[in-house]
Length: 390
View 1 (cartoon, rainbow, N blue to C red):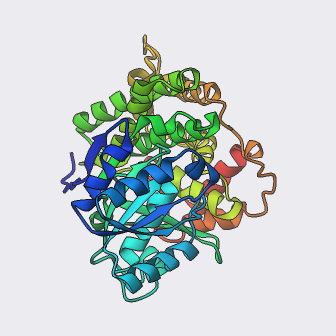
View 2 (cartoon, rainbow, N blue to C red):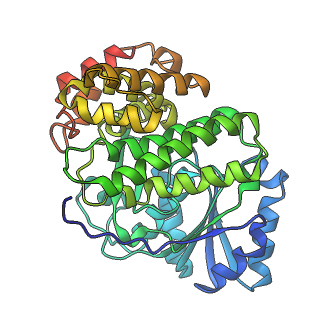
């Protein structure tokens, strides 16, 4: 096990009626809040907007808003939110939505306390030294942003998708109300399931030694995600299934299962290129990329992939070579994605043009050099993986 430092201050609240707790939680931090949300018709028609705002007003919390956040969130609303916080002296941000809303809130929180342009924080030109406090209400579990120390933003002018990480942008609290997820379309639910599973896999596939504790934590969470991921499509209004998935999403990406080990993250870095250039949905890029990546790299560390197959998908070794067991595990992963009706090729993502493959491969490896730890992938490797899943 490698040395590590881990901080996770986020208060987790599982509550079937978000309005019963949200006003009180925000009031304990501030009297004035910036509410960040999608602003879509459902948010208003469902009554969720009124429930949130009325709960805040009951506690005499003043509310300003930024809305219209889109999937693969962009800079424009972030800069508007920063300006509003500075103009009105707002010191607390409440994000109600999925990962895009929460990542936007984190960017506003960091940018409001930074003297330059917020994009500097994502390119490494600037660094987060302080940030406003954040609270979250998760309505679309999957990204894990509700308790993580990261934020991912797309520059709509350059099509770059970059992340920044700092414990200063970990939310102070998250409210998990399973009932808010009952009406999610099956595809959005499935994208979230794929995303939370991938967060565990990107940490699980590691070359660090003697990491049994986090191996076992990750394996248990992966099995829970697979089990509840299948059930949720058949029982979309099962409170306990939805609750289990919400907790899995949070634990999959708050960093706990990655302590003391190196991590891969190649698929996320390649997927960021697909989202940035084609506006592809994040979870859908991962169901395409993970099997392709695994097939490309498993021979570098067949025992690790065989362990994944045995412990997560209950595949018996029964005297078989590690390589064969590893391939069986990859096939089981594909079968699970098929159960969720998730895409397995780029064409199923409506990406039919390969003219950007080379430039995306170079961009994915330009910041840190070769990516991944199971096999360090060069631009040539990334390009081959993209063609293999075309």
